[in-house]
Picture (tube, chains in turn red, brown):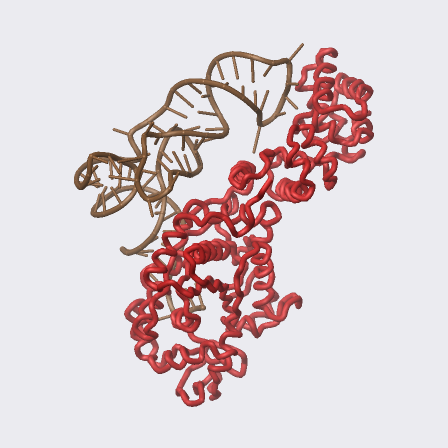
Length: 494
RNA sequence: GGGCCGCUAGCUCAAUUGGCAGAGCAAGAGACUCUUAAUCUCUAGGUUCCAGGUUCGAGUCCUGGGCGGCUCACCA
């Protein structure tokens, strides 16, 4: 069986149309597709990155050369303390994330603490993307020219901000935020530009004067200006935006005008995406501690399934992702489209939980169930079982979760059974033979119950009680046949 | 107030850039001597929020309206 390779997914229509518009306004390339959000680990990030990836692929499909960039705002000042971060970090307020130590000491900086896991997720997604850290861009002089340009056009930028937002701007406003000796980017006042030295003279909170060299990353442009400046500095031709940025008076509104009127750079193509929500959890919010990493979701599905799930039919629409009860159906549809063997995901879930880590046993169960193809591909089977098992443990509704009780638990659970049920279990235990097929086990279980005048529901209920501690479970015959015989016999002897 | 999105079967949603309105679940009927969130077969279920417009043809495009959700303030 030939499986579709990663990254070769069909380019969706909305992405192709977007690429077409980008090509009309920005030519045949080379194109620079940028996606950039703060490295806070919010799952919305993923949708933005995937939208950008789809458009980048659509541009490539048109024959253009594409540079695909993830831009991380590592130089940005810390402005709120995330849950779980020590209170002492209050003292780093206003400092660059790249200049603050990792609260857990595991990475080079506070910024990397959040960014590195996200980078790992991008790698796991097998994404062909280049990660740029903004503090490095500043330090390497990538922003030197646009910063000089911004400073020269301070009055013009200030006027645009005032017009678009309708707010009064401080008389001494500057597009540049120098870093004070204290490390803080905020609360400093630029008093003089030194274009010949790539610098500004500023006065900090305490009234001390200092000089910042903007060719060396000793400060940064204010957010709204930086956005437009980045387009020019990196030659951006496309960037997606969430709806929080694109409203009137929003950041794209100001950046668009700055780009055209100050930097004389054509506004990059754009796609406005809606957000995605996780059913039962509400909006993902890093400040509320509701954080879901791509990594977490790659535990239950392959990268291309994640792409499909997060992009939906049209990323301009909000979607509520159902990772609970609706997930098996999603997987079945995805697998059908991808041309994978048609084993129902729910079946894999049962098999995975029954067979534990034993791929051979699982293959046997699948084979007996008529799923030869899946059973004969151990590598793929192991991966699918991994997804199914993780889903069962982390997302599945309670009725689908299975765990064979240990001896003690089983004895406790059996306390509620009556004599008829115990006698039934004892008889069944005696009739079980090694190498019985699921079907004959099922037949034996049923026939025995009927012969004893025991209602099937009561009989099967007893079986599930001692094996799983529940009143119901997966189809009993195949399930029991898949378990080691001695364990079954032991649990039935109560 | 501005912006974006949604409104299609009882429920959750599809409808491939204008071409016979579909699926899953729920409901009803039947089948299986085999428990289940059962399975299989069949049935029913619709003024696509409203009013106009464009078109040979509109769930889809345009205008106006209604209801609901989200989002926006130099904070990146």
